[in-house]
Image 1 (cartoon, one colour):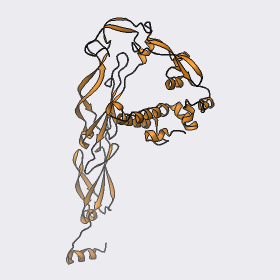
Image 2: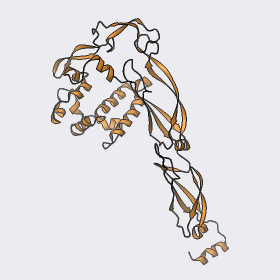
Image 3: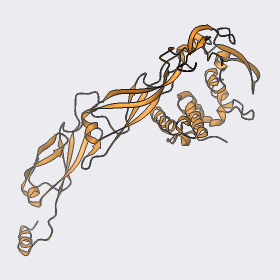
Image 4: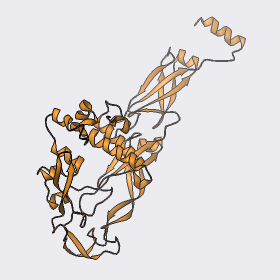
Length: 350
């Protein structure tokens, strides 16, 4: 039965790659086992992203469904074959080493170390409307997996060649697949792909090369940032003992304003005027994030008229310009009029 990967990630079939990536990050954060989440659900989410997160695989899935990616012998590899041949690079992701076995992935320990990358992390920051509008500095506190600062991620001192892999960092294993028994290379489980093991185990990290580190620093939130947007802090995610650190993403949640409605860099608000102000014209003080601004009401203004206050909106992120502020003017209909006032309105014949 074909799996609905779009439904698993909670996105529409017409979602952009960026929307798919954001949906994956959100759900992965929610269901991650390290944070008490459902491991089965997490693996299902990861499986969906491995397909939809790559344009080529997504196109194959849209055409053939998840059956094209199944390791079920009854399904075969029809999806790949019809799409124009087996993609060994993709198979490497699914079976853990086809690309190395056929020489497409580069199987040296040095290449593996260079391409290994730690996990990204995501934190949520709550901002008021004005903080998002004008920017603010916030202190960030969190824990991450980091290289041991005592042994520099080596797990100890006096490094010796690993006897399991003879310093190669990889071992050959036989794996049963639908194509038969196949020899394939995987990372050495003894030295974790490093090719070396310490003779003296580090007491700080117990030989793992990794420890939990408390992170604390200040971040400047740029003016004009919008609800749901993220700030990427390169290298502030988790670390691995050898390889590239992940990134930290700060996802912004902006509290709605009581009077202003935000539309990108523009702001919309309402102002009420009296019947006489609408008929005769006037100048009123309109509220904006920049303070009170004089707004001219022309003679004969109708209710629901929209006025534009140029450059009185929000600053555009990474730009020098501002959005606009739009004021929707509404006429207050008088109530509880006495006879004299009613007679005056009738005489106007409006």
